[in-house]
Image (spheres, rainbow, N blue to C red):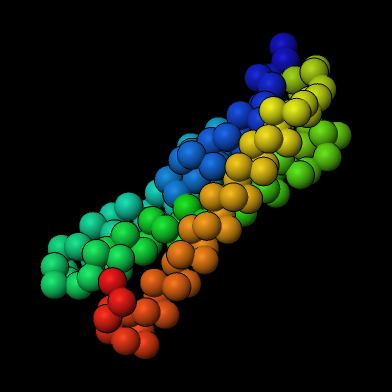
Length: 138
């Protein structure tokens, strides 16, 4: 009996959209993946910041989710750029099928770079504003 085949494009898509919550890790490695649980822990950490520091700037309240999301984008790039044979050896050893990347994956990786670069630069700019000027510019 063969095991289910994990799709590299779908895993990259999950990492882009729900990477902050670790959905791609749970898809690839199962529900007890430790790094996936760390991604998922960013949600209660953001809730703790919101509850314990209600006077804090809104950016600090969502910062745990933003950091986890940026890491999810990096993981999407790593998953998507992994050669098909290495991906199959790691995640599809007994499926009996081979992965074949297509132009959809390439387009998804370009979108991932766009999102990761934009969010990363915006995060650094906002942190610099808050730390240097106390939020005088926004």
